[in-house]
Length: 285
Image 1: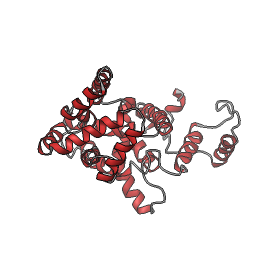
Image 2: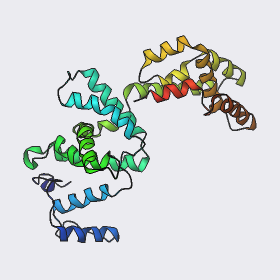
Image 3: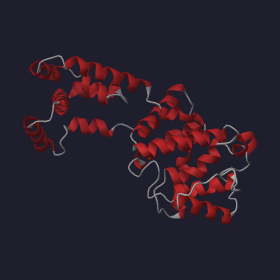
Image 4: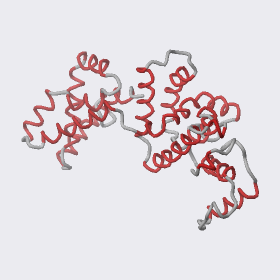
């Protein structure tokens, strides 16, 4: 992250010296103290070794579990980045929020490392005039390591990386992609305020209100498409009531009564969650 290194032409593209890279890998693998400024390793040596460690992870940093979701986001990202559709503020915000939601679901250690990587790549892209490395160029180099499943055939890897690189090129947004979407933050605050209010109520009042009031379920499940969810609620009140009741039961303290109620839901719905909740969850991009 030193200025003299960030401005190196071809950073992350040029390979450096293989002998120095092998030595650097040995130092890192043996957890030996290392002063990069005094040991003669170039910025290109360090960049190449860093990319190789990412490539050797057992799964991409954004995880195999999230790969199908990224495939769904890619067409919108490609269309916006490539100028195929008008990059309206609404479409850009939708893409940003979709990525933000997925990153919120990452395991903590994945998310923390990714934040460091995005911060670094954002700094490199900001010095494109000196290093000749744009956000798009960096995205092409890092997409195979961050998103693409391991052990893909070369042709499939090239095609997939090209298709998905528009997502990684969002490094130009910097750490903004790790922020909690504004609407979701509002919903979360409202949810906990409501939860705090209900703690002052008797169990009978809480149960009665959870069946008649859909605010809690809507808070959790309507962030992406409130209008569509509202229409679904109106068309199927029974499923909505079941989802609300299930949410209430899950919030109760652990007890034998709670376990019995959850077991009954499991028996009726097969997955331990009312079907409407499953359907709503699967619609989140």
